[in-house]
Image (cartoon, rainbow, N blue to C red; front, side, top):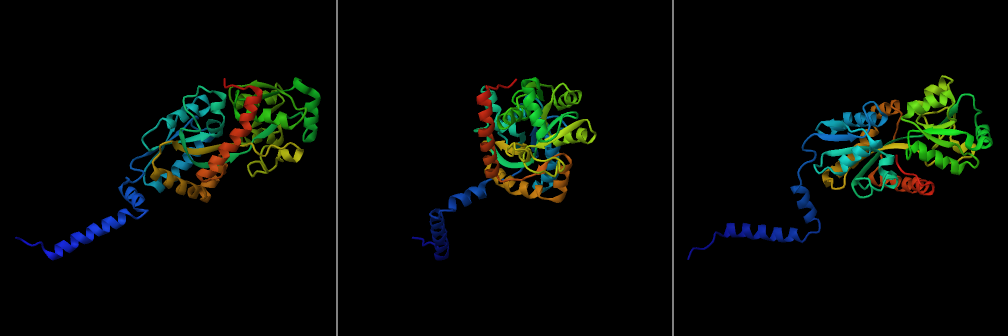
Length: 334
């Protein structure tokens, strides 16, 4: 009978003992899974944006793509899918299964879209992986240049009642919901809503005096204010370096600190763990770079770069705030 080689036997026995010990180690399964998981990204990454080239969400996406690509070692390509206030792009992201499609969404896509349209083809609460709140901006309450400023403006509005009008880019937009919130928080302020096809049309209506109020981003409002064509009454949110000369509405006794426009980075619900962890770590760090902050600021954004949890809390709180306005007013999307 042939006897086994004692050295080979010992080696086999030690390998078996090590495998048995490792299998009982609590971290072994995670270690084995991480070792087996493919590297991410393994191909170019697509950033889907729901607005056309040159829009503020598009600019934010391109700033991020420029720095994220080198950090990931793969090209990051911006894919514009405009329409339905960004919901077309959001649906593309929600239905993606390739682990390399991400979305740059605005607050409405994540907080109010489903409340405004229950037939929406995606569910914001279920169909996305939240990654980071990228940037925010306040809104400016503006009026025609001939109206009074400060607290006198609200006194004039109260005297006018529903004879005054306000404009927005459509039912359910942040400008619309924000003005309805403002009506709740400024007793006697009760202008009637008139929807327009885009903020440029809102600005034109303000300058001509067809409407007496609107909430618009600083990048659109301030050039007209500085040219003497419009008057800025106050900001939603607190003091902002984007509009340093405009006081917060809270200083006029109208608490509107909780309302801003923002853009966020999300992935589909099934986004790979390696992608989630890499993006949650890298994106906030990249946004802190001074060159990135300056480019975002020039486009009308204040950089945030939150954690996934920070974005989740923002979505939750704003959804409750604006959801209440949608329910109480019976608002539905156009």
